[in-house]
Length: 229
Image 1 (cartoon, rainbow, N blue to C red):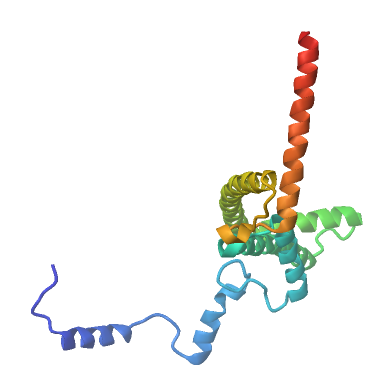
Image 2 (cartoon, rainbow, N blue to C red):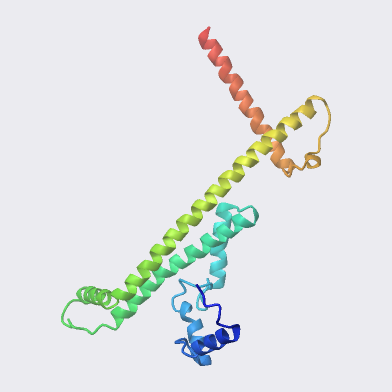
Protein backbone atom coordinates (compact mmCIF):
# COMPACT_ATOMS: atom_id res chain seq x y z
CA UNK A 1 0.00 0.00 0.00
CA UNK A 2 1.32 3.47 -0.85
CA UNK A 3 2.24 5.80 1.98
CA UNK A 4 -0.53 8.38 2.00
CA UNK A 5 1.64 10.80 3.98
CA UNK A 6 3.95 11.38 0.99
CA UNK A 7 2.81 14.62 -0.62
CA UNK A 8 2.67 15.26 -4.35
CA UNK A 9 5.57 17.79 -4.28
CA UNK A 10 7.76 15.22 -2.52
CA UNK A 11 6.98 12.62 -5.18
CA UNK A 12 7.83 15.13 -7.88
CA UNK A 13 11.17 15.89 -6.26
CA UNK A 14 11.97 12.17 -5.95
CA UNK A 15 11.08 11.52 -9.59
CA UNK A 16 13.22 14.45 -10.66
CA UNK A 17 16.15 13.17 -8.62
CA UNK A 18 15.79 9.64 -9.99
CA UNK A 19 15.79 10.94 -13.53
CA UNK A 20 19.27 12.34 -12.96
CA UNK A 21 20.55 8.77 -12.58
CA UNK A 22 19.18 7.63 -15.95
CA UNK A 23 21.56 5.46 -17.97
CA UNK A 24 20.07 6.56 -21.30
CA UNK A 25 21.78 8.90 -23.76
CA UNK A 26 21.94 12.54 -22.62
CA UNK A 27 23.66 14.41 -25.45
CA UNK A 28 21.84 15.24 -28.72
CA UNK A 29 24.30 13.02 -30.60
CA UNK A 30 23.68 10.13 -28.23
CA UNK A 31 19.92 10.49 -28.46
CA UNK A 32 20.15 10.57 -32.24
CA UNK A 33 22.22 7.38 -32.31
CA UNK A 34 19.74 5.72 -29.95
CA UNK A 35 16.80 6.66 -32.16
CA UNK A 36 18.53 5.06 -35.14
CA UNK A 37 19.30 1.73 -33.45
CA UNK A 38 16.33 0.09 -35.17
CA UNK A 39 17.70 1.26 -38.53
CA UNK A 40 20.84 -0.89 -38.28
CA UNK A 41 19.07 -3.86 -39.80
CA UNK A 42 15.55 -2.50 -40.27
CA UNK A 43 13.91 -5.68 -38.96
CA UNK A 44 12.22 -3.95 -36.03
CA UNK A 45 10.67 -0.54 -35.50
CA UNK A 46 8.21 1.41 -37.60
CA UNK A 47 10.38 2.10 -40.65
CA UNK A 48 9.66 -0.38 -43.44
CA UNK A 49 11.72 0.86 -46.37
CA UNK A 50 15.32 1.57 -45.43
CA UNK A 51 17.00 4.72 -46.78
CA UNK A 52 19.26 2.50 -48.92
CA UNK A 53 16.35 0.55 -50.43
CA UNK A 54 14.37 1.24 -53.58
CA UNK A 55 11.01 2.80 -52.73
CA UNK A 56 9.66 2.03 -56.21
CA UNK A 57 10.58 -1.63 -55.77
CA UNK A 58 8.67 -1.63 -52.48
CA UNK A 59 5.62 -0.09 -54.16
CA UNK A 60 5.68 -2.86 -56.79
CA UNK A 61 6.06 -5.39 -53.98
CA UNK A 62 3.00 -3.95 -52.21
CA UNK A 63 1.01 -3.89 -55.45
CA UNK A 64 1.68 -7.60 -55.97
CA UNK A 65 0.03 -8.37 -52.63
CA UNK A 66 -2.89 -6.05 -53.34
CA UNK A 67 -3.44 -7.71 -56.72
CA UNK A 68 -3.37 -11.15 -55.10
CA UNK A 69 -5.77 -10.52 -52.21
CA UNK A 70 -8.01 -7.71 -53.57
CA UNK A 71 -8.72 -6.27 -50.11
CA UNK A 72 -12.13 -4.79 -49.38
CA UNK A 73 -12.43 -2.28 -46.57
CA UNK A 74 -9.93 -0.77 -44.18
CA UNK A 75 -9.27 -3.91 -42.12
CA UNK A 76 -8.42 -6.12 -45.10
CA UNK A 77 -6.28 -3.34 -46.57
CA UNK A 78 -4.41 -3.05 -43.27
CA UNK A 79 -3.74 -6.80 -43.15
CA UNK A 80 -2.53 -6.85 -46.77
CA UNK A 81 -0.20 -3.94 -45.97
CA UNK A 82 1.11 -5.86 -42.95
CA UNK A 83 1.72 -8.95 -45.10
CA UNK A 84 3.66 -6.94 -47.66
CA UNK A 85 5.74 -5.20 -44.99
CA UNK A 86 6.58 -8.46 -43.23
CA UNK A 87 7.51 -10.14 -46.50
CA UNK A 88 9.70 -7.16 -47.41
CA UNK A 89 11.57 -7.53 -44.12
CA UNK A 90 11.91 -11.29 -44.65
CA UNK A 91 13.58 -10.62 -47.98
CA UNK A 92 15.91 -8.19 -46.23
CA UNK A 93 17.02 -10.94 -43.82
CA UNK A 94 18.21 -13.06 -46.74
CA UNK A 95 20.02 -10.09 -48.26
CA UNK A 96 21.67 -9.23 -44.94
CA UNK A 97 22.87 -12.81 -44.48
CA UNK A 98 24.35 -12.88 -47.97
CA UNK A 99 26.06 -9.51 -47.50
CA UNK A 100 27.38 -10.49 -44.09
CA UNK A 101 28.93 -13.72 -45.35
CA UNK A 102 30.33 -12.07 -48.47
CA UNK A 103 32.00 -9.31 -46.47
CA UNK A 104 33.34 -11.74 -43.86
CA UNK A 105 34.71 -14.08 -46.53
CA UNK A 106 36.42 -11.20 -48.33
CA UNK A 107 38.16 -10.16 -45.13
CA UNK A 108 39.47 -13.63 -44.28
CA UNK A 109 43.26 -14.04 -44.57
CA UNK A 110 44.51 -16.36 -47.29
CA UNK A 111 45.74 -19.24 -45.15
CA UNK A 112 45.96 -21.68 -48.05
CA UNK A 113 47.75 -19.73 -50.75
CA UNK A 114 48.80 -22.88 -52.58
CA UNK A 115 45.34 -24.48 -52.56
CA UNK A 116 43.00 -24.34 -55.58
CA UNK A 117 40.68 -21.36 -55.76
CA UNK A 118 37.60 -23.47 -54.98
CA UNK A 119 39.21 -24.78 -51.80
CA UNK A 120 40.18 -21.27 -50.74
CA UNK A 121 36.65 -20.04 -51.33
CA UNK A 122 35.17 -22.93 -49.37
CA UNK A 123 37.50 -22.32 -46.45
CA UNK A 124 36.71 -18.60 -46.52
CA UNK A 125 32.99 -19.37 -46.32
CA UNK A 126 33.50 -21.75 -43.40
CA UNK A 127 35.63 -19.19 -41.59
CA UNK A 128 33.09 -16.44 -42.21
CA UNK A 129 30.28 -18.65 -40.89
CA UNK A 130 32.28 -19.25 -37.74
CA UNK A 131 33.27 -15.61 -37.25
CA UNK A 132 29.75 -14.32 -37.83
CA UNK A 133 27.86 -17.04 -35.96
CA UNK A 134 26.39 -14.62 -33.43
CA UNK A 135 25.16 -12.18 -36.07
CA UNK A 136 23.74 -15.02 -38.17
CA UNK A 137 21.94 -16.46 -35.14
CA UNK A 138 20.42 -13.05 -34.47
CA UNK A 139 19.21 -12.81 -38.07
CA UNK A 140 17.77 -16.31 -37.80
CA UNK A 141 15.72 -15.26 -34.76
CA UNK A 142 14.38 -12.26 -36.66
CA UNK A 143 13.55 -14.51 -39.61
CA UNK A 144 11.59 -16.93 -37.43
CA UNK A 145 9.70 -14.08 -35.77
CA UNK A 146 8.82 -12.54 -39.12
CA UNK A 147 7.72 -15.92 -40.49
CA UNK A 148 5.35 -16.47 -37.55
CA UNK A 149 4.04 -12.93 -37.94
CA UNK A 150 3.43 -13.47 -41.66
CA UNK A 151 1.52 -16.73 -41.14
CA UNK A 152 -0.61 -15.26 -38.36
CA UNK A 153 -1.51 -12.20 -40.46
CA UNK A 154 -2.25 -14.34 -43.53
CA UNK A 155 -4.60 -16.55 -41.51
CA UNK A 156 -6.40 -13.51 -40.10
CA UNK A 157 -6.85 -12.14 -43.61
CA UNK A 158 -8.09 -15.48 -44.99
CA UNK A 159 -10.62 -15.85 -42.16
CA UNK A 160 -11.89 -12.32 -42.67
CA UNK A 161 -12.24 -12.75 -46.42
CA UNK A 162 -13.94 -16.14 -46.09
CA UNK A 163 -16.54 -14.58 -43.80
CA UNK A 164 -17.04 -11.59 -46.08
CA UNK A 165 -17.40 -13.71 -49.22
CA UNK A 166 -19.88 -16.03 -47.52
CA UNK A 167 -21.97 -13.04 -46.42
CA UNK A 168 -21.79 -11.57 -49.93
CA UNK A 169 -22.97 -14.84 -51.49
CA UNK A 170 -25.95 -15.01 -49.15
CA UNK A 171 -26.83 -11.38 -49.80
CA UNK A 172 -26.49 -11.85 -53.56
CA UNK A 173 -28.74 -14.92 -53.50
CA UNK A 174 -31.37 -12.93 -51.61
CA UNK A 175 -31.10 -10.18 -54.20
CA UNK A 176 -31.40 -12.61 -57.12
CA UNK A 177 -34.57 -14.05 -55.59
CA UNK A 178 -36.07 -10.57 -55.48
CA UNK A 179 -34.94 -9.73 -59.03
CA UNK A 180 -36.47 -12.93 -60.41
CA UNK A 181 -39.69 -12.27 -58.55
CA UNK A 182 -40.02 -8.83 -60.10
CA UNK A 183 -39.10 -10.20 -63.56
CA UNK A 184 -41.84 -12.83 -63.27
CA UNK A 185 -44.31 -10.03 -62.58
CA UNK A 186 -42.94 -7.95 -65.45
CA UNK A 187 -41.85 -5.18 -63.13
CA UNK A 188 -38.56 -3.38 -62.73
CA UNK A 189 -36.60 -3.40 -59.49
CA UNK A 190 -33.89 -1.07 -58.18
CA UNK A 191 -31.60 -2.94 -55.75
CA UNK A 192 -30.18 0.29 -54.35
CA UNK A 193 -33.63 1.18 -52.99
CA UNK A 194 -33.25 -1.68 -50.51
CA UNK A 195 -29.62 -0.96 -49.71
CA UNK A 196 -28.00 -3.52 -52.02
CA UNK A 197 -24.60 -2.40 -53.33
CA UNK A 198 -24.04 -4.99 -56.06
CA UNK A 199 -23.28 -3.65 -59.52
CA UNK A 200 -25.42 -4.47 -62.55
CA UNK A 201 -22.59 -6.64 -63.89
CA UNK A 202 -22.47 -8.64 -60.64
CA UNK A 203 -26.22 -9.16 -60.70
CA UNK A 204 -26.23 -10.29 -64.33
CA UNK A 205 -23.33 -12.65 -63.67
CA UNK A 206 -25.20 -14.10 -60.70
CA UNK A 207 -28.31 -14.65 -62.79
CA UNK A 208 -26.33 -16.39 -65.54
CA UNK A 209 -24.67 -18.69 -63.03
CA UNK A 210 -28.02 -19.49 -61.43
CA UNK A 211 -29.60 -20.29 -64.80
CA UNK A 212 -26.62 -22.45 -65.78
CA UNK A 213 -26.85 -24.40 -62.52
CA UNK A 214 -30.56 -24.95 -63.11
CA UNK A 215 -29.92 -26.28 -66.61
CA UNK A 216 -27.32 -28.67 -65.27
CA UNK A 217 -29.73 -29.89 -62.61
CA UNK A 218 -32.47 -30.36 -65.20
CA UNK A 219 -30.11 -32.32 -67.45
CA UNK A 220 -29.04 -34.52 -64.54
CA UNK A 221 -32.71 -35.18 -63.65
CA UNK A 222 -33.48 -36.06 -67.26
CA UNK A 223 -30.67 -38.60 -67.53
CA UNK A 224 -31.46 -40.05 -64.12
CA UNK A 225 -35.11 -40.51 -65.12
CA UNK A 226 -34.06 -42.04 -68.44
CA UNK A 227 -31.72 -44.49 -66.70
CA UNK A 228 -34.44 -45.47 -64.23
CA UNK A 229 -36.92 -46.10 -67.04
